[in-house]
Length: 389
Image (cartoon, rainbow, N blue to C red):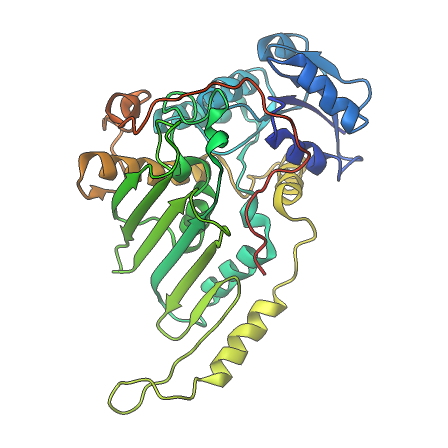
């Protein structure tokens, strides 16, 4: 049985604890770390976790952690790299929350530490472990809809004004960015997983409703792929209703999450005829529905894959390289928006935006933080996106 230490006991740790508890024969939480130990103890009591050591510092936990196999990093983004590298160097497997790190340079250091340690590193992208995205990915790969010509990705979230009052949120230094980094990362990961790496991006960012944050609460980006495909992505925390979706227009049919397939037919003059290609629509839908449902979904699905990777000595579905690819697209969005230029991908290692601290020196401060709250009241479940059918 794998012995687990969780570093960071904020709200996202609830989802991780709940996921680990799904696999009592495979893993056991034996240690937790938080700068507010009383918050950690409250969670342990809530979930009925016994014989769990509580630490204020992850270095103390590692020094005392000969029995620990896995470190689960749930801290704010600006210390993901530090926490992960220390754990890997101590010989622990690591599951790290999104976003992977504060810079691509930090991602490289994390990947190097993983390779040197021989341990498993997985970066959280729990939306891959949903039936909607799992089946959509399989349908894209089947090519039943033909070449994907256009993608529309709406990463629409809503967060109230007080959301950015938490001490680390809303700052470029500690959060690393706004909705593009910490919310749209889920959909950006899904985009690059399904469609691969684009060749360039052009973008804009803005802050329209949160005057207590330095960072953006709204962004829009257009990606170009080498084969001519275009993808447009909007990231937001100002959209009431959080109407999230991913619509892929293939040469033969539209497919999407939430699921819908439409296959138009052309008249002799090229205009669409009233009748769709029902046979193709039915064929695509039948394929989609026949993709087996996942046994475990969201964070539990990722924990299952992570545990299996350790047990089978294989790479996890979302490893360090996958985590870095998503951050690279996000970094390119910021570079394009800040420099007001199209940005070619991949980014060069000597690019200022690639390096640690490079974004900080150039990022706009839309506003300055007006409050710094140490802790909000804790909740068992925080919204992780709309359930897509």
